[in-house]
Length: 56
Image (cartoon, rainbow, N blue to C red):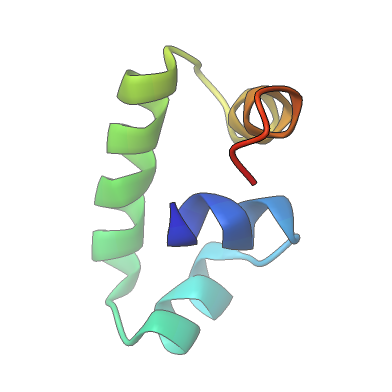
């Protein structure tokens, strides 16, 4: 949820990695899991769905 919120706030993967103390690869892994759970294929789709559903 934290990564999804940061994506919705416009943070880049590098910025998310630095803010959360993760590696860039870890952020990419989490992104893939978010896509699977939300059944979407892009950041824009994930953020749009999260906003519509009140997740962020």
